[in-house]
Image (cartoon, rainbow, N blue to C red; front, side):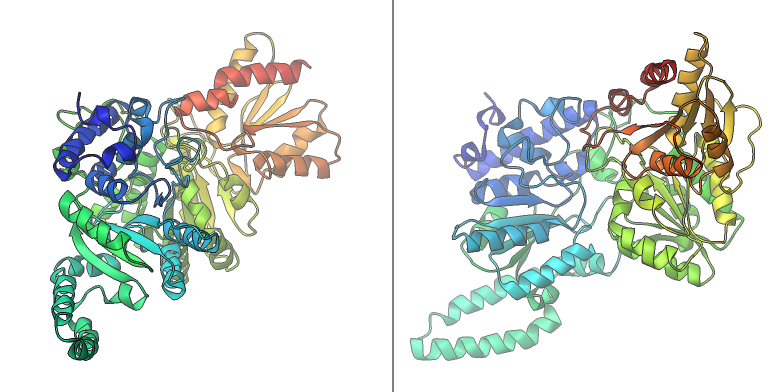
Amino acid sequence: MSLLERVDSPADLRRLSIGQLAELAREIRGLIIETTARTGGHTAPSLGVVELTLALHYVFDTPRDRLIWDVGHQCYAHKIITGRRDAFPTLRQPGGIAGFPKRAESEYDVLDTGHSGDSIGTALGAAIGARLLGEDRKSIAVVGDGSIVAGMAFEALNHAGELKQDLVVILNDNKMSIARSTGAMAAYLNRMISGRTYDRMREDAWNLLGLLPDDLSGRARVAARRFAEGLKSLVLPSLLFEELGFRYFGPVPGHDLGELVRTLRRVRALRGPMLVHVVTKKGMGYAPAMEHPEPFHGTGPFDPESGERLGGGGPTFTGTFGSTLVRLAEHDDRVVVITPGMCLGSGLAAFRERLPNRFFDVGICEQHAVALAAGLALAGLRPVVAVYSTFLQRAVDQVIGDICLQRLPVVFAVDRAGIVGEDGPTHHGMFDLVYLGMMPNLVVMAPRDEVELDAMLVFALDHLDGPIAVRYPRGGSGSAPAGERPPIALGRAEVLRRGGHGNVLAIGSMVLPSLAAADELARTGLELTVVNARFARPLDLDVVRAMASGDRPIVTVEEGVLAGGFGSAVARVVEEAGGGRRVRRLGLSDRFIEHGRRDGLLAQEGLSPGRLAERFREIFRA
């Protein structure tokens, strides 16, 4: 029996020796590589924290001690040793375990996490709760060097240092967020690594002075403390965290189990806010992921021997966005791009390589990304903010106040809009049509395929009368574009087919499935009009009012939540046009949708071509 087969919980883990933990780490890495090669997933992040995960569960009394993972893409080893080893092959599969911590799965998963920056604040709240309830339990937040720059993380560090709560922050420093970490904080942490001897020297000196007679020891230690306070500003890179009120430990080698366990045992015996700086290697133990950590941050299936990706091919919305933006920027020196740590995922690798002086990766700081875009627009440039739908949610206030209120010509390229698939509810882009659709001065577009995305980006960069958001889904449309397209004109829809039995007004990723459903129904004699809305804001009022003037139902189709979404805006126009016309809105359910294949989840939600045909038939035959 392997060591891994003997570990069903952290209690089993604590019966092992440090040497056995090292062997267990090797076995866990093998299972992670074997599984993610088949299912895809966040391979490199989880490989980088295997020893750290084992040490945390070995030293702390989890689940009584609360362990909170920031972002959560580092959690695979955590899942394997907390009772989900046998279920791990189902990772990210329909009905299987999630790729992120999930409270419904295990008492060891304290928080459903998928975004960054919230772990320290949540752990602080848990620490305060434990104190107020008289409970003796630790709160531990594991945050990466790419996440600690987030505004929420700094806000929580500042508050925790003031409150002096019993809180442990583990800073996992691998010089990477998704891509290589950038900015002053990344450089600061890099300097820390060269200053790791200071803390040991201070403690050795403190212990040595304690051996003096009592009357001398106290005075000597006071003098030593004063000397150290003056010295550390010159030699101690950890000054920032200590000034924030944290006791700093490290840097600690993150793949040395003995050193990790010794350090964490010291920390566990102490009280107050503490920060443990752990230096790890992203992708550790798997050469392809160590050599190419950025593409292995989140990957589809791959060959475990070579690391080469399997499948793929064909045009995608993300790829089209990246290539179009490079083409447009090469002809317009005003075009600049901003990404909050999502260069590769947003299709910007070529832009970063070819136009580096106009590429700005701000790290996982969406609010700052939008504010930066405002300043660039005020300076006369044409900023494009490339961001996933689920992450743009964190900058809603800045989009409203810094961009829309000022009517600045900023373009938001909103990737992963709608169902994203295996990453699940923390990453589905379900809400952007609602929160963007409510903002004055903002134009909101959604292309039906990659050809239309190209045209919309050209239109967006030529539009100077305020901001524009272009939302598009993960993957590709699968269409074979042919024929002439009407030019993009502000607030103008496109009629794709005409029929006298009913009207379908679809937007973005739902246009082609709706058209396919209507074509299928036409073979049975049910002829529908299908319109590609193109714009969620402003709507094509002429088209909507013409539909409302007839006696047939209007069906809207969107890949977003229905409450306050595209269909709600259409229904409001229909009501204002005279009311009484029946509008049926089809979209995503009013719930958080679980993980699974994108096509399977769309079918489950009634938004695949086959399911839409069934729903159209029911509505228009009624």
